[in-house]
Length: 263
Image 1 (tube, rainbow, N blue to C red):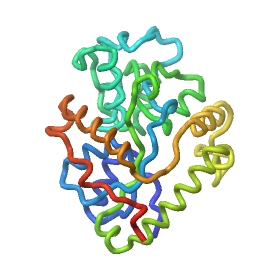
Image 2: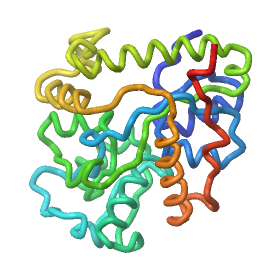
Image 3: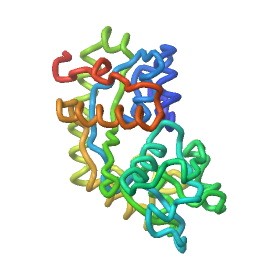
Image 4: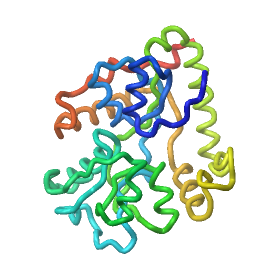
């Protein structure tokens, strides 16, 4: 197997798996649902519980936005059909704010920081990959986080269906590795930071390092997909259909693997 680096949001990775150009990728259940609505050639084989503190809606430090209700009439950056759009819609629904009273600005997460910091959007619904840098630099704070929102946004690992059929033992071995090391990482997050470099633009230092360690220590581990998880997946699928993010409720159960039965 070859490491291709990060594809960022799950949608392009799903397209690559569908085109037989990628075998395994990581993404969220939210992006997974939208990708499953488009003739998928992959299945999910692990689940990591929703992040209670590392995902949410960011506002700039000094912003006068102090509640979800304050987002009415404002612009919020989200990635279309993925974690960002889900978190915003979920937060609005919980607060009783009609979704059409807040303007969604669809942007790729890796292109949003400059727009957010320039004040071209008022808030940014995002996850820890991008939130750590903003909070660590003292530029932003969470208006509300995953726990407060009631997020069911699991992180999942997906495998190309053909690859899983041809190499089930590889998928099982990868799961065993991810499960073991995610548990170790949660117990000692600092040991998994700056593995390749402790300096430069990809290194996490200073306040951002403290934020990252805190987030990981409160996060979940890579586990098999259990019946209770599937029920929460179904809740997200129903929510997305109700919010018209997907045209119909996606059948998630048809695209799941029991990794413990692979060998």
